[in-house]
Length: 324
Image 1 (cartoon, rainbow, N blue to C red):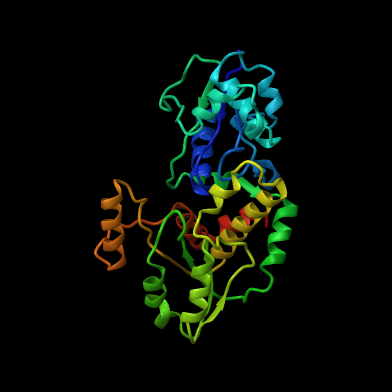
Image 2: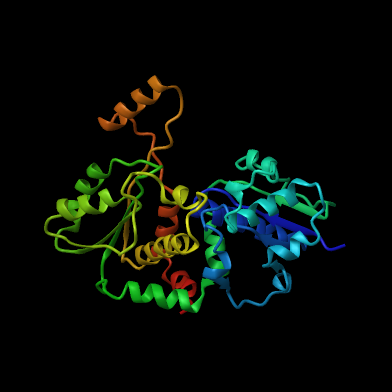
């Protein structure tokens, strides 16, 4: 009996890559067919429209991947959560999900963000294993080493980056769903960046605009990527029902363009970010005030920033990722 692992990652870009890598490694280890369904993830459904496997031949990687949802739907048992989720993903991709008044997919909608998974440290007898979860980390590095950009995507991104100088320092600031004190961070870089080319990328247009005005004495460059102008995370907005496929695909190209551009820098400076505010209204207000005056030092680095830093420090990986 052929066994399958169905990976339905959730979360932003780095979370998605981490969850895919986790499943890919498990499928290789335990000889399972792997179907990755990123319809409602930080890849917006475009996994194989963007990437292809690196041409590395190992016995465990032969015929491992299932790339068509229909192949899994044909054998997924009726009445199971797995089948309902596959149908929900299909409905989302065809814009039926929001307008369905028949009751179909109701269970899938209720369980949209509920994690479904299994013990990754042992083999299982089940024919189908389902992993639907989010969570960041550095496993995304493994995914980046497994794949490369499709030739058409790599050529498009190279054309977008042709205007960048040959040598530059990368600066990345995450500041939408994850917040950062970007003005303080940019001010701290002013002296070290004076007289240099600096590439500034962010998910927030306000950050790029501020950097251009504040980093006097520095040649500030950026990409033409579309950035949030409202402070809302783009990866959340792009997953909404009714957002056109071309719009979502454009957002993915923008994100990968920034990742590759940042990785091309001689070095990178990454802004620390604050975790999400939790608690009641009063406690959130207190935390927000402490952050504003610099008392809250509970910070970390976003997964996307860490991935950009990894590519900056490993130009050979970046070259392979670009298929060069």
